[in-house]
Length: 125
Image 1: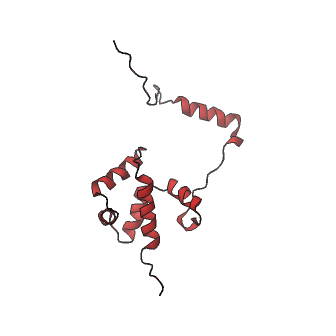
Image 2 (image 1 turned 180 degrees about the vertical axis):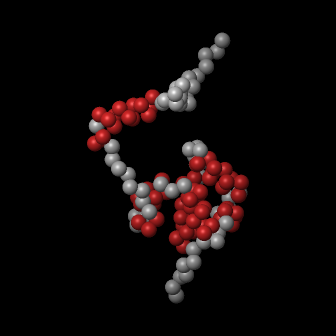
Image 3 (image 1 turned 60 degrees about the vertical axis):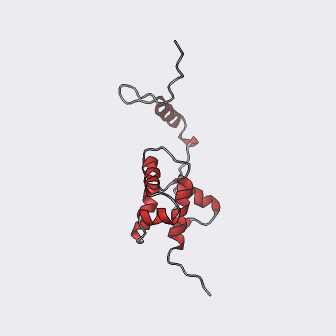
């Protein structure tokens, strides 16, 4: 018989318990000072390169696509403009919501942010 590799998925006990959550709770109870409050960046507050990363970490692709839709840009139109198949864009969006991440997620979010920031702006002559 060939030995099987260990299972890497999270074990959720009979009552929904998770040993990682339990450890986190004990750590918080023993010293909540070791935790820091993270304030999500708003798009209007993005001024430096580090701010872009902080903002994109706290906004979903679905939210960004919703903001584009509010400006009249459909998901299909965005996909065509950035050279992506619409089904692939949908797959990236849905997988993020399930906490599975495509490699292209960050770049796709950045493309959405760029379009949101530059849409409707005209160059001064």
